[in-house]
Image 1 (tube, rainbow, N blue to C red):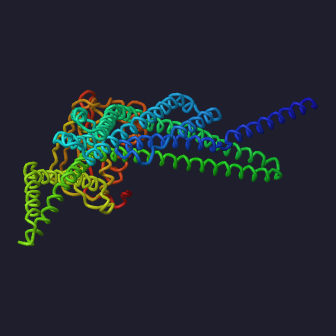
Image 2 (cartoon, rainbow, N blue to C red):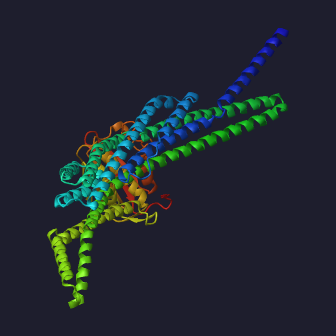
Length: 586
């Protein structure tokens, strides 16, 4: 009997130990995840993304600015190196397969871009110095005068060509402009042989500055292209998403064990309730701990949702950056056109001013009548006649008229570009208004023109009614679809067909391309967040997901048809009036 009681007591002790052990196991599984280090790692990834974007902005700004005395480019390489060191340290203390796998390639890409940006800065500074030296020395040479032989029409023509061609070559660097600049520098070098010593030195300095510009401008353009191709933003977005997925999976596992813990604790408390009321205090304590774990997990999920929203906003900012880069590219040419025309006009004004000044002197002498000195009158008359003859021979007034017309043409082009940007963003209108989708497609094509240079556009725009919508959101959908269609043709000669037509109580818009198409197994996932058929590092997979959400919020629908090797067609149907409960946030 005693042996039986001993065995029973031993079994009870083992059972109690097993119950307590299981309880502690579940409790340990629900312990809160230390999100501090993970949040620091996410912050470092966002810092690297910002550095990468600012590198691209610095390169674009350096290409647009011509003043060598402008604000120097900030060296972001130390900050990038420090961020990579912090990320490497975090990968050692955090268990993250995604971070450990992607860190070597990411480090190599960031370091390579830092090196390219440094080389670009040096080449850009040298090119700007060459342009500044060429323009400055040419102006000083024209102002200080030279021997009568050096003041021949050849030198004046050469300096005028240099003043016109050098800035244009710096901004566009086309082959024709390069040849024109080389030709003008060659003429300057030949003309310098006939100059006196001081003007000849200025001419040689101008020639050396032009040679410096010709030497460094191609290197600057090539390095800018390399920097543009080496963009780590999508790679960082993909790594950030993978890292957040790991955190989310960990939190979901904690949540699952929390449910197990609640169920197990409830059963255990019921069992303990049979053993006596002395365990009520332990029950209350355990419930409080479970509630605390629940709050911690809820807070962690809230932070994860905020990070996801930040990633979506990052995709929107990336699209905005592409659009701004395109507008800057389109507006640069007419801007240079206007500046060169005004510069040429300014060069003609001194001759007109001189003619007017001597004309006024001649009028004063004529008004004096017989009291005027005949020699002064004859000299002023000869001077005015000579100046007028020179203006007529040089066709100055006709040339000024042409330059003014050229400047007006350039300003009209910039007005058209700004107008299209204004129509695209709809900043001067209410967020929700009546809007004709044909206008949205037209402004979208204008702003995406830099992406469509090798693509032909077939517009089949029908007579359609205006719909009530958020124009800025609908234009974002059109920009995503047109950009995807252009990228699907991978630089080859292709065609994008845009079709609009009235369809029932709504409007149908079709965007069709002749690209490589989408595999059937990917069609069902094409609108899923973060899903992309592009190569790794070339897309985040958020564009179509955002477009799908916008169309859905308007009460419409978006579908896709694709044949591999033939092309893809996206169809967007939007109602004339959105549902009453539609949330059309801008």
